[in-house]
Length: 202
Image (cartoon, rainbow, N blue to C red; front, side, top):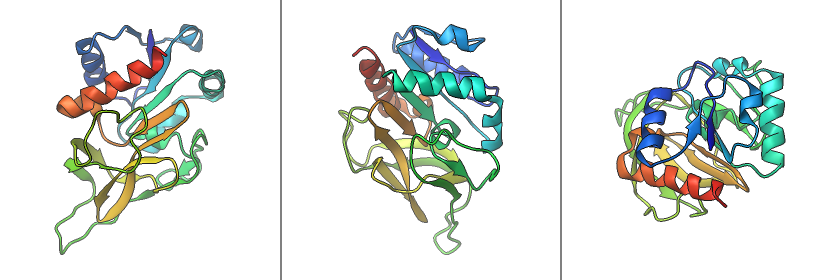
């Protein structure tokens, strides 16, 4: 059973449909107690980084304890950004600190007509196959919608260029994140979700 965490800022409908399509058992927990026994945690998200404040200290401790005990965690879009130390979008709001670095605003490029927010399909430059991106070719197309992004660090599994080069997928031990929306990314996105389920099943 996967716990799909709802903090009123996630694209839950699409994620739920994608998980149902690939045959995943999941629950949307009403409290941290409902996460007990979950084989994996997914934190989705759209919009402003400040929305993560809804996941208070009790939720943070529950998630961090689960990760420390070996439970896989997947962050999607703002949920991935929350894995880092914080974001320039909401400087006073801390991230989980599971990944080093801060989230910064993307640069646009008028000459190349690259606008912010970055919306649409773009390619994954796979730097490290890992477990999350298993079976995907470098250059696979996925769907983005965001204005802020993570730096390229040692946890980068895939990078994407949009004026800046940023981490579009990260992986460290049992912690995973994707800046794009796998639930809206066709076969490539469904493969990533299947890969995460495979990790959760051990």
